[in-house]
Length: 462
View 1 (cartoon, rainbow, N blue to C red):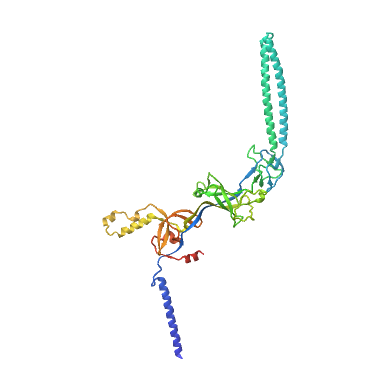
View 2: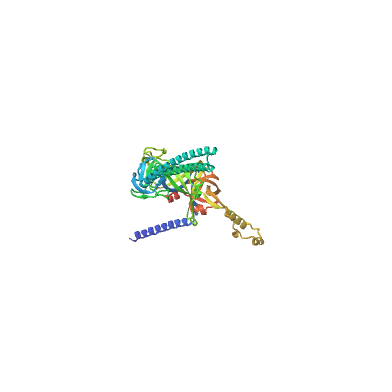
């Protein structure tokens, strides 16, 4: 009966020993006691390829009408009639509102009467001139015949010249009175405000019965705005570092917050020459330039009453027509430059190295290996770590070849969201290191051993 127990105990001991050896083996392998430690740094790689790259400048701003007219009255007074409401569509010369004309009508009547009075005085002056001229002619004839005294002739001549001057003054007085009447009549006409353009009442600031101030005397009251809502644009601010890349006529993709997931075609129509400063005089000062992008995709068709002057991209859904309103927020991707079939790599593959430090490391290594240096020479030569080399930053990529990396200097061109153009230093089809960021930016050096593990990085990124 004791024998089965002994066998069972022996089996347990054997199994425990096997498990122990397996655990020790796994631990030893992971610690590198045998089998060799994995050689090289783990990296992710990608192939260089020929690609079309479009450089994009991103900015955000507000949608506004391309044409918007502010209506301000020329005369002051009370609004007696208001014929429009916000959102109404009007034609050029449609009546928008009327200002109380009573005061201006009274002024016209007064000045008209004044003109008539001045004209009557003018006719009186003409009659006086005719009489004084006749008297002058008669006195002249008598004076030549020595029938009147010289003083009588001089008096007649003076009276004639005075009546001529008086008639000329009366003519000028009539012209002045007519000019005042004409001004009063125009002011009376300005009590009726007409639409200067076809458009939509985009903003209405007054109500019937309110008093407004005319722009002739001072800054007038803004009563309303008329906009061409079928001609909208996006006004954005572009940073000074990017504005040099933006040009008139560049195409743009417009995204409006009110229509998520949609993109609308646009084109750059205006670039400001004067900068807009924010945080002026502080460490956070920002210099921007206003850029206007016209929305050329079909929109706001109701505002145009069938006058569709925009074009529509073939790639857009013609059945969908957005309704843009002034003040909507939006962003734009301005396509500044496009190159086709150029060598390109992922942006993260390009990193920077200080070649001055690399040269210093090489010189330090050669100094240590130089066994012929004398003690005197060593003392007289400044330690290399006290020398401050001039910074020499260059763009490089690490090319994979036979389990090692080769650091190669490159010249870069334009970039998009994912790839950057390589002008020189690489050929299409070469394998380059693209990750991880820590290894690529700091650890990796020319000639280092590597292990490519793209599957691991794909899992991490996913």
